[in-house]
Image (tube, rainbow, N blue to C red; front, side):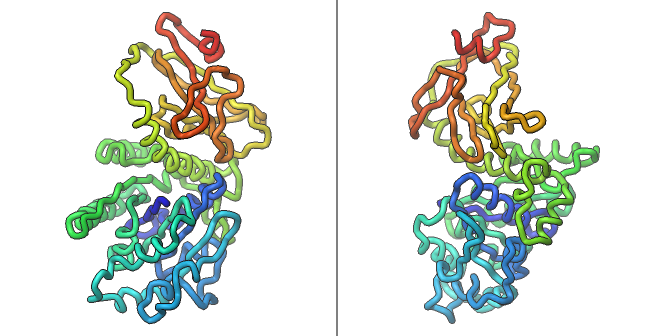
Length: 370
């Protein structure tokens, strides 16, 4: 069970929106997902269509010392399919005062999540826009944190403060957190935004997600209706972005596994890039990605023209051998048009393409014949 905190002490940077829509996108890819609302404002609860003020049991009751008979599983409500919510309301704000001075006060949420066992593939915790006991509980319960930022000085300052907090946790509790930086509310037409995102990538390096969440008015429309923006389908830019983020989050763990399994002393020849087109026939699919060792197993979005059944990705690769698979609406698939396969050490097979240095341009069909 991967536990991921969505956190930034600055408000209005897309934190709750990311928690809701990343959770929905992961659930659409057949992952069991729990959203834990740790913000007393209850925006994740409202954004998923639940009226927190009408609930008799919330996260507060699951963590409060005065409600020892209530567990986290008692407060969880199903939103739909494999997506669940542990809701909250303004009463949660009393928890910080209640737990102040108690031994192990940072451990309450961790213990509550541990009691769930392996019920979920992902737990996403929406944190309040402050660094207090509620946020400390969330960070202590997680090994990963996603920090949504808008491209502004104040948001970057909040990111710096959060990194200081994670370093404090590591020193005090010997608990390390991997921090990923997600650029939200991105306006690609703005020259300042383009310059600042380059600076963010230079400064934070691989901690920055490849996916950026573009500014989109449909996000506010979806929130007002109590539903995730991914429900709007792939014509909505934000829906596409959150689907891509879900693929990247899933592939991050896969990359670690595959990278370890495929480590080899064989050096591939270096050369100029070769253009390759990968195609996947997927009638009725909503999202199609390709992932392979050419992208360090990060998901690359494929495109289709005018609702065609064939999805394509155009890649520029140096000569060498590359393993890859398609992701069709969350389901892993090999390339049916490619007979070259290798066993995946974690189950199933990977498709294989071979690009030779002596060819000026080697399309995938020629690689298959080789």
